[in-house]
Image (cartoon, rainbow, N blue to C red; front, side):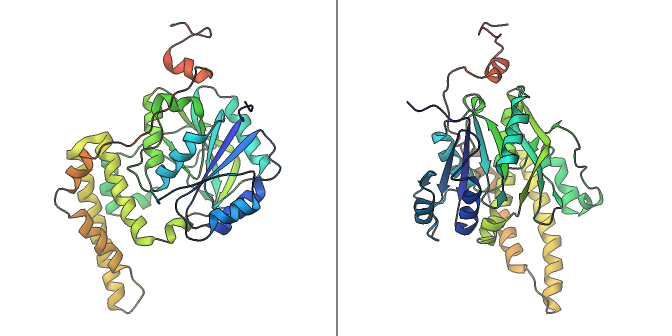
Length: 332
């Protein structure tokens, strides 16, 4: 049997062929650590699968029969991954082996953490937000009223335990998967990494942001190809998250706050339309109708989780920490 790789890189692709080929050109054919690259294609129509097979035979291509969303694609990669570490990497992220080795080395020195996220910059060198506090129902009224813009979140300057890190460059210690499972496939896009991080932290393990190295992320390429669908998916995923962690009553509160925010912004777009300026009235009106659907929150609260389970031998220090075992596998 072939030796298991140190790192499995999982790339989920949907109709971003050129970005995918550029990313693979940076990573193959000469990886600097023992790794495997798994490309999960969510039924792209841009010939991505054929081009990857032709140009990068060393990549493992996993074409899917449907576009089940980001979490769905991630799980298909997790199911095939053999590495001690698993890196989720967006096609619109830039990664060099120098940065990847630095990220792995930093993570190896911190056995108490299960998920790591690095500093993220945009293509112009500006720091992007890549950590978030836990999403709480009380956050949504200030957001609806634009008050959240008055206080910018501080960017950490040193390695820090956080509630959630960005899913565009998301490093997972694979031994955590038997403890918490994979991503929840109810989330088509957005909030899936927040839900996963919540489960990791509730298992008693750390989610850690690292200041070095930094990665470049362009952002929004796949989402921009289906703007209405992703706009609606963001709000549905928000409600799914709160239904899972805060119950129906508080999720109804979040829904009302989302509706208020959409109504205020819709009024602004309607004013722009009346002045003959570009507007997004249709998009916001569609979102409002979705949130007003009778029984919407109740249906989301009863929608069962879709989290695949994983089994693995107890081979990593984090397994012992999480399960209360000493270095010899005995209960402490």
